[in-house]
Image (cartoon, rainbow over all chains, first blue to last red; front, top):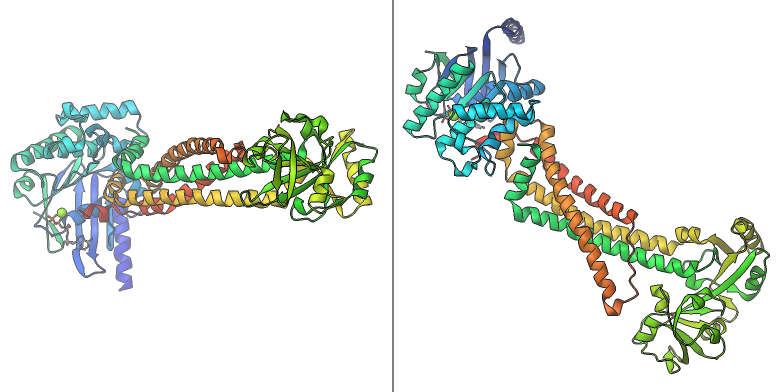
Length: 242
Length: 370
Ligand SMILES: Nc1ncnc2c1ncn2[C@@H]1O[C@H](COP(=O)(O)OP(=O)(O)OP(=O)(O)O)[C@@H](O)[C@H]1O
Ligand SMILES: [Mg+2]
């Protein structure tokens, strides 16, 4: 048993080495994840690879483990077994995880998770506090993003004064401000009405085209999944491309 | 957008909570300042009584309080006639209690005592200091609270005296004291031929160590200390000073615990927000810095308010008629720095747990929690 495990481990490491500097953005190998010491099994032996610049949907019913997988890829949660490489970094290593969050990935949640009492602009600039980019440079990036998302006249409004769609657009700006390589979006349209949802999704596609970013989006809406480059179906703890 | 903004936004959002934290530390600082400045002021006043125009103080070795020190007349005569002594002033301290006035401090002194010449005489004159038997000379505050009038008789303890002078002295203790000719005091306190301390002024200050050596060889049961040395070694001062620092520090520590509480509440109520910062790339130390930044802001505001409040309160105490003169506050750098050190240290110690807790927040747990 031990032998087999060690073999798999070495193989994985070799494969991880191979993909370094290649055009792979995220690779997931034999990943297992459960909660409450194994009682709730969420992911079992999941494997997938996502190339740079792809727009990928993680699609599945509620409770299938889409968020869990995104969290593992972004280093927000720990895996039980297996290996994940995100932007050539190991999310289980504390320093690499920090680098990942600071410069490589941007998160967008179903609920915007913006900080109340700060203005839209201030919220978007929070990630810049963790990097060395200069104030004029961050201002420049903010203005560019704000213009792209059409939030120009909302810049100095506080979060509580914005609509749901505006908040979600602000969350997108925040996720993009440090020029990440990968965006992890967890039901970004989940809390919006159909039309606003579609607007946000097309905004997404536009940003991806312009900035050549990899986007992994968890969604249970078939219509959005179908517009992506790839769909991974999450079901019964397994992930398969369809 | 900068780090400070993140600190302020939270303090501003929970104004009442921040104000409670600030008031806690402000009260602590004010209390500590009051206790320390009043006690230090009192010690200064007492030191001042002893150092009046003299260099050395001679007293009985190993006494716990100068009121119990005894030097006999032979010793006084011998020491006073040493070649390096320019002037010598014996003092006999005594305390009388009466029904209305639990503590009346009496000073038995000689006519040459510099206090008499330096005081402002409201009634009477230093020239007549010895000319009347059973005469007393009152500090102006003592005259007030004893309701004494010039040339009238007053009762002090079991004896009646004639008020032969009322003088205003700068030192609060002295101004509230009763002065008597040394002989009268010795008789009254049943300590014939004894004094409490002997203050010495030398002809040349550099003959100090020689003077000390001679006296201590002659009378091994006496101590000779320079005024400064005396204040530093006198155990009553040390006890008083240590007690005031301890009480003050306790008050400040309570303030610090208030800050800790404010910060714990602050962390618990925004787990989600901290989780977002972590997702945005904040490191553990940045999160801790955020908590310490808030704490520091609270302590700075609290300390400023506390120092201002404390100074005002002490000045207010000084103006209260019944306390008038007893309180002579002393604010010095040592006190201020000491208070700030205690305030900041206690608050930062109090922030350790919330900061540690905040840095341990796992974004995934906090974000799942609605
Ligand atoms: N911390 C946790 N403790 C226990 N169970 C958990 C925990 N986190 C997730 N789960 C469980 O894991 C499963 C997958 O959850 P996950 O949030 O990944 O689903 P999802 O596909 O994102 O669902 P939805 O579409 O509703 O967001 C669920 O059954 C959930 O109850
Ligand atoms: Mg989910």
